[in-house]
Length: 502
Image 1 (cartoon, rainbow, N blue to C red):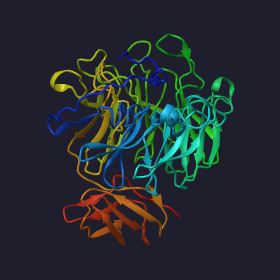
Image 2 (image 1 turned 90 degrees about the vertical axis):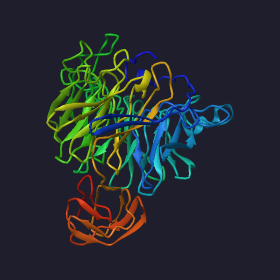
Image 3 (image 1 turned 30 degrees about the vertical axis):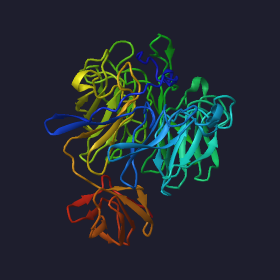
Image 4 (image 1 turned 45 degrees about the vertical axis):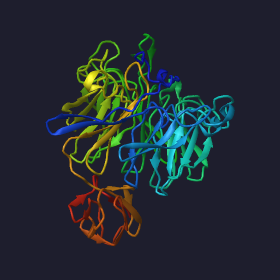
């Protein structure tokens, strides 16, 4: 496959190649173990490009851009991974004469599980508007696999959403579209669980898109309640370049209130990176962290990409500039793991046999010290996939899980992998904040027999629903801090503090 020269250019269709399922492979490096769980072979999807999530049932869920099951046209899936084996929940594009496009096609973004238990996401194309291929959709999928199209974009309210949606504290979902809107620079939208959509902001409303252009990533809601995101292009700097050598604006970081007031926090200028195409993450220190696909001082004109830190008010610090040997083009976002460090992937680069590198998994401290944990490879005993477009998720067993988009540079399909680095199990709150008396769900592993749940020391009444789910309410006297669950095997702490709101 040709090396991708532009992040948006990558969105063209790629051929589906059926692969035979290979044996699971593990590569151990000291205390860490990398395992290829399975190879996609078409029926359950092909070419996963988004991060996975862990749902309340303890299983992993994700999307693929191509593949699926059906007698007609198939353009992507929503899938579940249980016991290291995939199950297709829904296939997009299935229907006589391509009528399935009405329900969406090519979900580049992953899904999120709402507090109602359903999965929500976007498709890049399809829907009932914009004749032939559609402008994209927002959808809901029940755990049983039934799909509801919540909204079909028509261009005026945006089109081609590449980032997914997030559920904010107000119970609504928020997302972005890369194009369309009042100025064709993309939009930020709010949509209710029932499908009522409101456009909150239209990009390129300022001269030369100084406020940003083409938001490609999902949003994050910070502890202050505002939304933070990135735009791939736009801003006040125009000294960035695509591979073909034409100058372009470099991209931005922005803050948006839930009422739609936008503040541009930073305009990239190439030296500190450009083309940020991934979601931000707010770490426990209150700062936001992200990546730029290109830029920085290394790797010639285009640069190999960066990892950056930005304060909620907009002060940006470059933590690391990739140089190819340690990775190149960090297309996906970062996560903060239970050890306090950030983890992520690079699309290319690393020490492997691929031309330009097959991609990497890395760890970086909050102060900027980077360690390469895994180099992907496509030949011989190290054939574990190439091009990890998606980032990582840390499951409640402590291990990391992710995907690669292809089996090799010549073959599509992709893989799902796990990486254990010695981190122990923990519990995750389905919502990050709540007031006293609010119902919340706690996700974990081996929760059967739990004897105590406490919010920063305040004991709470609870019900063990399943080995992976506890329901409880925020108790009187609770304050912001870690949630603790005592089980017969261990005492588990939440990965981040739970915020008790007024």
